[in-house]
Each structure stands twice: as structure tokens, then as C-alpha cells.
Image (tube, each protein chain N blue to C red):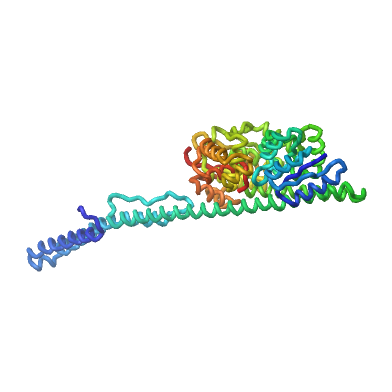
Length: 210
Length: 321
């Protein structure tokens, strides 16, 4: 099984690699420290499975998952996260991840999750299932609709991280004109005036860290 | 009497006094000197003088009363209960009215300053907390994740005698991570930023129940009005502080958290614990003063209802919404 691992923390990547490589049937073929690199590495190496940290710079793990699933339908995605918050789980599943593993349960769950997802099954750890059930039972289950398209969210994250239109165009393989029109659409859709407000929104939505 | 300065009033009173004296003197001068020295004459003078003094004191007292009221108002001022102002009465002299107005303006400025510096302190505190939380979350927990992974890798090649030991170490690491996550969440309510007030409170209350074994419920009445970030944070923090009191001091088995937006915004945290005797209005107990200060910053008000044996209710009321 050929696996790509992406996490912006080198020590976590080191641990993942050590554990995965120790399994006779698994092999780490690529490493990435942000979402953009993960997507590019995935295109280059076409792994069977990607283990993606949910919070990464430039492109979140979820955004990368969406891209990878769109371009490489045979590559499965397993989301790795510190958050047991239901919303992150929903978002990950929506982005095309087949499994969601909490970092604090990584020792028990990771290898099982990798095998399950590779077989084509879904995988959630116990803690994640518990919080999903809690969400179902609370009255706040219906969250606000996401007003932005996935592409617009990608542009928003990069704007919030202070990339120029030109850099954004390069990272997302888009024309600069297209980026400009996305930026205008973002401001219009969210009813905002400038970048500062966009940054605040991006932080609130968990697209980027404060 | 159009002019109302103290000086003019005293002058006026004194003029009346002198006039009366002169008048009496004139009456006496018209009669013979011997008669003046008579009992009737002396009585008349005494009567006149005491009449004048009485009149003088009545007039002056009435005039100086507004001043006394102002002094009283000044000593009654309590900065923890803002909004109190000295009254300006129409009878007051110009100086007293100006003094009162200036005092009120000064109070206004003091309260403003106090509010602003309180806000700044709270804001700085939140920033510092969020930095700490970020560090715990990003640095320490990532390192612990790596340790978990490495232990798991070691486990697959470990001699059987060490396996239990390694597993125990792993569960310790997991515990540490959970505690750190909890701590980070206490320090900085990311759920508040990410999902809004009601979901954040829902999960705070549910977490509290899971952690303490105290049965905790959360209910919301009415639809959420637009609240400022500061107001949301105050509601969140007051809930947090109240729940932590419930866990530490109350001995309660149930706690109900209620957030009502019907009419005004009211947060109510009610437990069925021991309760306590509230002294006066339940001041300065169990971090209550901190909650009060927070409430004040957003124009809110904190009340505590408690009786020994009858549980405790903490109520945060925010202005009309």
C-alpha cells in the first residue's frame, strides 16, 4: 500500500512514517508539510491513500482532500485531526475523506483506519462517533449554510494568509484574472469591504489560524 | 431674587437684617431714652434681634441645602454600580449647579475610563490566553502525538514482557493530551469563534457533564439576537465560571443552564447544591466579583440567589434586546 502523509509538524510526520513503515504491507511514498504540497505530491506519486492533517497552512487538509479526490478518484483520504468537534468531522466527510482519526487516539486507531479506508470502508473512532451522536441529539444540528464554494474557500484561505493574486494564481493553477474575480465575488457574497474583514471571517471559519 | 449666587443671597439677607435693625433703632429713637431702657423696650429689641436671626438662618439653610445634597451624593458614589448622578435642583445657586454639573461630568469620565481600561485588561487577557492555548495545542500536543506514534511503532517490535508497560505509557500520553485539550479549550473557546454562541455553550455544558458526572442540561429560549463579540464572550465566560463553582463548591447533582432571549438576554445557571447565605446581595464570593466586572463591561448585571440547602442560581442580565 503506497501512502502519502501530510502534516505541518515535522515530529508528527516522523512518527507517522516510523509507524507506517514498520508495517510490512505499507510504504510512505511522499511527505508534505502543507495542503498545496500534499496535492502536488499526490498528483506526482498517485498514492493509494493519503493521511492528511486537517489544519495546515496554504491549503487545509480538507481543501487538499477535495482536490485530491477530484483529480485522483482511486486515492482514498484519511483525515487526521486534533479536534473532536462535530463540524470538523462533517466537513472532512463532505470533502471526500473516508475516515477521521483523532490525534489522541492515533496509537490505537491509525493502522486500523488505514486498512479500513483502503478496503473502501468508512472509519470513525469511538470519540468521534460519540460527538456525532451528541450533535444529532442537540437542537443546534442544523448549522448555517456555507455560502462559499470550495474554490472560493481556497482563495479565501490564501488571501487571509497574505498571498498576492499572482501567488494565489500560481498555487491554485488558475489565471490571475480568475483569482481577481473570485476575490470580488467573496467580498460581494459576504458583504465585506476589505481584506481585514475577510481575514476575520477566515479565522472564524477555521480556514486559517489566528 | 433673580440673581442666585451665594454672594448675592448672603448680601440680600444681610441687607434685610441691617434694614430691620435700623427700623427698630428708629422706633427707639423716637421715644425717650429712659423709655428705651425700660423692660418693654428691651423686650422689643430682643424680639427684633431674634426674629432677624431666625429669618437669616431659615433663609441661609434653604439656600445651602442643595450644597448638602451634593456632598451627600458625592459620598454615595459607588463605581461598581455606575450610572448614579447628583440631582440638580432648580432652587440651587449658580455655583452649586455648576459644581454639580462638573461633578457629574467627572463621574461620567471616570466611569468611561474605568470601562475602557477594564475592556483593555479583558482583551489583553483573552489575547494572552489564546496564545497560551495555541501553544499548548500546536506545540505540546503535536509532540505528544509523535510520542504516541513512536510508542506504537516500538510496540510492534517489543518483547512480550514490555508490551503492557508500553501500553500503559500510551494511555498516560492519551490522558495528558485530553487534559491539555481541555485546558486549551478553557483558555480559549475556539468553538465560540468557529460555531457561534449557542453551539459553543451546548458543547461546554455537555463537556462539563461528561467530565464531572453532574447532570447538566442546556436550554435556549427565543432566537439569538445579534450580540457583539464581547457580549458573547461574557456570556460564555460567566457560564464557565459558574459551572466551575458548581463543580468545586456546590455538591450539586443537577445543574441547568438556561439562555433566554425573550425580551432581554438572560443567562441563568441553577444548581441543586448546598447553597449558602448571601450577605446582602451576595457580593465578593467565589470569583463572583470577576464575573460582576465582566458583566458590567457590557452593561450587564449579575445577581445571585441562594439559601442554605436550597441551591444557588446565578443570573446574568444584559440590557434590553
